[in-house]
Every structure is written in C-alpha cells, then in structure tokens.
Image (tube, rainbow over all chains, first blue to last red; front, side, top):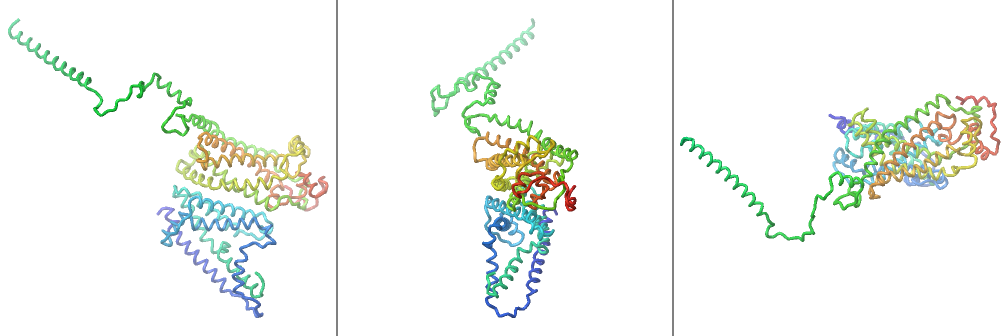
Length: 214
Length: 354
C-alpha cells in the first residue's frame, strides 16, 4: 500500500470517524448541559431570540463597523472561500463521490476555484495577523488558536500546491494534513464551525426571553 | 594457328560481341525511357514563369542560415513572430538568463546574507541608547499592521516559491535529484501563480495605506549625510527615515514591475509579442532578487538587528526612548515634547536593554 493509498484510505476513514464521533460527542455534551431554570416571567420568545441571535450576528454592529470592517471582511472572505473550495473544487467532489457519498454535484470552474482560494487565503492571513497584532486578541489567543489557524492554512496551502495533479506525493501530503486536521478539529476551537450556532443561539434566547434585541 | 585455336578464338569473339550487344541494348532502353518522360495527359500546363525557376537559388546553406539568424523577414507558414523566420531574441534571452541570472542570483542572495551576518558580528544588536523608558507611544494602527503583515506573508510565499522555480534546476537538482526537484517545482509553480494576485492585492493596500509620510523631505538629506547615524552623530528623521522611505518606494515601484510582468507570464495571451514575455521573465527575476535582498536587510533590522523595532509592527507602539533616538522629529511632532534623550533611565528602563 502506497503512502497515498494509506492517507486516502484507512487513515482518512479513521480520522473521519473520529471527527464525526468527536464533534457529535461535544455538541451533544453542550446541549445536555442545559441551563439554569429561569423562573422570571418571559417578556418575549426565547425560540425567536435563538434564531434572531444567530442571524443578527452575521452583521457587524453599526457602532463598531468602522473598527471591525477589516476582520469582518477577512472573516467572511476566509470562511466563504474555504467553504467554496472545500465543497465545490472539482477534485474534492470527485473524492467525495468516490470515497464517501457515491454521488457528485456540479463543480466550480477552475478560475472560480482559484478566486475562491485566493479570497480564502487573503482572509486567513488577515485574521491571523489580527490575532497576533491586536492587543486584546493576542491576550485571549492561546496555542490552540494558533495551531488551528496553521493547520487550516497548511491544509489549504498543500491543496493548492497539488493543483497540477501531476505528483502523487503532493496529493498524499495534502491528504495527510487533512487527516491530522480532522483528528484535531473536534478537540479544538475549530469546533466553532458547529458550536457558533449554539453560542449565538443561547445569547439570543436569553435576550429574547427578556424581550430584548440580541 | 591450329583449327582448335581458331575455333576458341572465334567463340571468344562471339561471346564478347554478345556481351557488348546486351550492354548496348540496356543503355539504349535507358535512353529510350528517359526520352519518354512526359506530363500525364490531364496535367495542367503552367506558364513557365509561375513555377520556381531556381528552387535552390544561388546562395549557399551557410548564407541562408546566416540571413535567417540575422532576422530576415519572410512569409513562413507558421511562426510566433509575424514575417520573421527565426525569433533570434530567444537566443539572447536564453544566454542572458543562463549566463547572468541563473549564474549569479544565488551568489547575490548569499552575499546579502553574508553581509548581514558580518554586520551583526561587527556591530552587534543596536540597543536603545538609555534603555527602555517603559513608556510606549502609538506608531502604527491596526490597519497598518494588518496591511504590512498581509504583504509580508504573501511576499514570503511568493519569494520562496519563486526561488524554487528560478534556481531549482541549477541548485536543487544536484542536491535532491531531478524527481524531487520536479515535485517541488510543480508545487512552487502552483503556489506562485495562486498567490500572485494575493500579493498584488496586498501591495495595493500597502501602497495606499503607507503612502502618507513616505515622500522625501529635507531631513532625509541630513540623514543621508550622517549615514543614518552609522557614521557617527545623531541622524534625525520624521515618521519614516530615508532608508524606510527608499524601501517603501522600492516595494511600490519594483512591486509594480513584478505585478505587471507576473501577470504577463501567468496570462501570456494578454500580449502576442514574444519579446514582451522574454523581457518579463528577465525583469521579474531581477526584480525578485533585488526585493528579496533588500527584504532580508529590512527583516534583520526590524527584528534582531535593532532593539525595539519589532514592537511597532507587533504591538503598534514603540518605546519612547526608541522613538526619540530613531524618529525624533516624529516624536516631537506627536507628543509636543523635546526628543532630547534622558540618559538616566529609571529602573524599569534597564529591563529591556540587551
């Protein structure tokens, strides 16, 4: 078995399974924590607040827009670019079809993939620079944040370096780092990809029940 | 002569006559065949002047090739250059690239690294005179810092991948072999092409974000005359000193050349004149070597070479004593206080000296 077959085969399935079980375990754990019973009479809907809280946080507050525009732009650029690259790059769709789902879907054209990747890279660099150069961000960032950022960067970088699809070793390096990323994901702050719904929702529900805007 | 001898002589004569007759008939047939060559009945008769009367011409092969090599214009059936049989610039381009760029680029870079190491060994780390004051002064905003590191990040990726593409064959092949170099070059090429537009975007942001304060002033002339303080004496400067301003304009102008030539190389269909592509590869390589060389010095003086410099780009603020020493005019402008150095630092000041 070649290195490529190993990282695309058994190692991928093992890390993918750990990713799924770990992510579910953490999500269920958070949901099961519940919250303290609120005995005050509700002045609004907590459920509506849950959804409102989630939607409201997609837009920067007007008061802070001037100070936050750069990382808001970087954040959207990175996340949307990564999403497009991850799920709509032709080689990824082929991989999903052959290894996981058994079916495929339309892919981005090559130029679309390249633009999405460039936006994602630009966004990630901006976000990481902000992490170490903003005094508050630097204070609240720890090793986990930096490892998560760098692992994601390396996954993206190795993927782009293998774009010519001419050398198995480049693909194998990319897949090896993808496996590590999947293993690291559930046990790190990369989980924010799933938990942000719960945290925004919890804040929104709390505010909603009090009849306030989240 | 006996009868037997007569008979023998006669047979020989007959044999010779037969042989000569056969040979004569063969030659006669060949002559007859030559004379019977004629156009087929359905052939179209062209006027005599329409066909090439002298296809081979009167010139020797060497004369013809000399003309072609000299750029003679003709009507070739296929050519990258209209009307030109041979793109002779290609040879000059190849020779220049091989004999100068590939031959000396790495020596230039090694020379710069050597000079930096030598400077560090001789001069040592430039410490803050009077030590750290413990009081900080804002120097770069968050957007300045993000713009700077955004460009720095894309520049490092572009520089490393570009050097692999440029010097992989002459330098890496002897070390790691052709196969490994092919893999690295393939990866570097993809990365270089991908990060190119990111570099251009970051260059544009830096150009506009840092333009204010980077125009040359009279104080820069004094700074030059004092060698930036290296020749002794204090060299006053504003927000940016002459070296920083020069670096800024090098980044902007050479970066512009790199961007334009890079786009021509990435999208060759933008122009159909081969000479532009050849000039682009040369300018791109020379620009890269210059930028990387100066960037090495910039990175050195901004980090280990000078105490307190990195704070400005990491934290956005610098120690007051650092500001007084290196950017006294700027310090006086933003604080309204004198930049005369206090030579008796408090206890906390000694903490950061090296």
